[in-house]
Image (cartoon, rainbow, N blue to C red; front, side):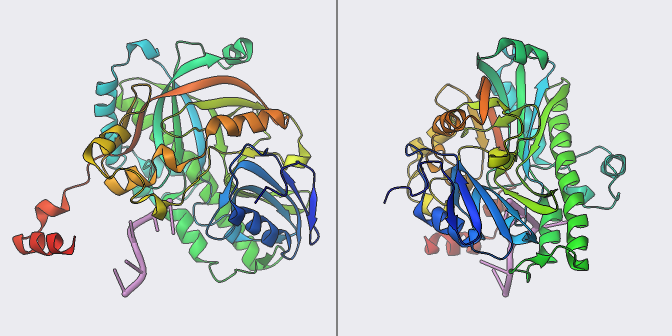
Length: 396
DNA sequence: ATGTAC
């Protein structure tokens, strides 16, 4: 089936307009289109913008921005405040030894050894707000990636950010961990959304805003920990949430896997095997609800990836390297397979569509050098009894 | 996505 909204013109379903920013060349699942339609028919939904990384999610379309007069916490889900932060490290890329970088980044696996409570307080958050989780990446599609500069399209704009072809960048994708999940738990029953003036909505929004701030701080602490591990410093270039609700002209702007675009520069992640992009959003794009794609977007869901790739040892070893010699640290085999580059759409096509829609100009292309996802957890099999071994073996 | 439901 073709893509009914691919012409980019607004289509009307219910009261809401759906404006798409992807071309026929982008892979868009029918189930995601169905979800867009369903959301467009919900009470209070006014306008929807959908991006080329659009794919179906648990409660609604991922890769879309939804403006509604009613509040829909489920459109955001549990990882409130999730996003990408780009930093520059105080060390030129040519000085990096990738195997050493990979080894040192394993320090991220444990907890933050600094004063989490003090950092929370400095960010205006309660010191007892999940201090033990602060500075941890989490699972799923989250990562911390050391990048080099592949090419620069706008030298002046790139230099104005204090960046050059020699720069080493650090892209952190993480969110609010257990906090966002706990906040979502408080409104799990509100599947039909909330009246924004209701006290329950106000309470949720206050907790939501704290989770957004916590997630931003989390990315900063992760970057700081990575920089410390690499014996260098770092400086923030851009912090861009893609999972949050903001007030816009008296209505709620829900962004689910849609990057906030009303800021100077936005990093858009590729898969771990392909380049990421630093783009400049076109100002004041009301039609795109001041949003952008947040990455490549999934092509295959996690479950269907099992059996698709990583069957043999040599295939799994291939997944631990990227095509240009970079390294991937992911000692969790299931996660390595679920997050294989083949599970994602072509990020180049995503950028092409955003450029052709006039939503962005690309400043630079960044190549992955070392992608940290997860290092060895304590080996549970080694802890088990001999009987446990036999049980496990018989299950296979 | 999640100190992962049971």
